[in-house]
Length: 316
Length: 324
Image (cartoon, rainbow over all chains, first blue to last red; front, side, top):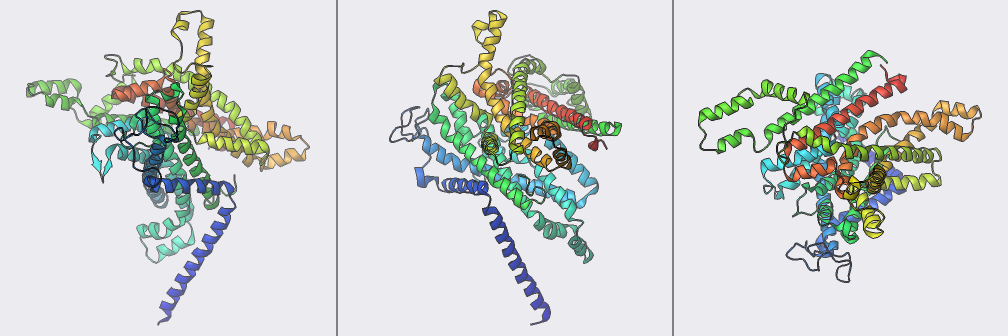
């Protein structure tokens, strides 16, 4: 075996050991954040429920398969009462977890991909492209995104038709996902760009450039791995916002009645006059879940941000 | 304040507003039911009639720049088109009628939330780790995670449907509308309590969290150490030195937040059936009244941009360091 191969192997194993050490340091710091641990526990519970809703409450009840009486309070067979169609609230809320969190996850994915690409390209390239991208992000930062989403969603829906499907997902949900993604990437782009600006002045970027690496290669292999921490922290915080926004949009009536997310359930509750009738069991379960999930993601996101983001260390 | 700083901020605001108007323009072209499609659907129209109609509406001219310029001009002069739902009424009139209640709700909500939120946040940040900090920060985080309508719905269940202390919906009862002015005010107040509580509570969390962070940052500044070295009391350092300086970032944050507040107020209005922009938004959404929806968005967007511009100016006055 030549010395070069041995060196490469040694460097690789060194790298792995390094990664292991960093992971341990990170775990050590995270475990001391009690708020982060509480958030993580809540999230795990919701993740399990969202992954296997049938295991807990059986199939999603519809107006046809509803088992209870209309808008009745909690009884033995229906621990959380029923809605105005006689559907079991526990059943709806548990299935709502999957829908709300799936939409949140997809919207977060779009937000982060767009934000990271814009942030890295703008920060690394600089010049006119940077100025242009940042002016665009200025506009999106100031724009009231929820209000923009309120007018964007119905327009897109009317153009493509509410019954269209993409990858087996109904158009209504896709529209909500895309609208949230397209209106909330600017914050992420800003945060990542500022980090890239300082990264690109570092020695390893110069070295890569000197040995002839192209811009694309440097951005993928040298810049991206160094902002991945930020991206993780930002993803978790974005998820909280995405679930929040989805709930708001669904509540306003832009959700899909056939895929009842928590916001959609609250919309149905409002439409059937549940608050004025004092039907608390119709509102409390989905509302509590929304608050718990948003709160948990915020707690985890803040903890991650404090640990992973060099600019916010130890502020809280 | 240097003219250059002012000029740059002004250009920024203007560019944003123009970008919003162009976005609106493009969306108008995307929308279903455009005049072109309507004309094409009628088999009895001769090509000449269609051409004449297109010429009258300016559709024969190129999209950019002619149609765009015409759109920007009419938008700038306050012509936002006509509502579909409220037949024949100009969008400006329809939206204008709903602005008052929303401004009342959001304005009062902002005042209440700013006063209480900043005080709680400042005290919590100053006595970091104390009782007020633990309870206040925890409650703020929970409130921060609640959409306004999620705060509003339990309020109705408890205080309106349950205890009957306040009415469940609306802004004024029909009886009070024609009665004496004092009765009108009392009735308005009774209707206002619950929506105002929902909006204030929703806002309070964010302000208290941000103020706490600002105070904690300020506490480590040299001038605070100096003030302490001079022998000032803790409360005087907080009131005279830390609090005013921590207020600086809040100016920007309150302006940036405005868009979220209005969006939140829209959902709160729906819950309480408050006759403002939120209720109008739902009506327009259900009727697919696009001109009105766009009018609402334009109004909100321009207000937010202007609020940010004003915050930049105020900040420039307060903090000489940014005037470069």
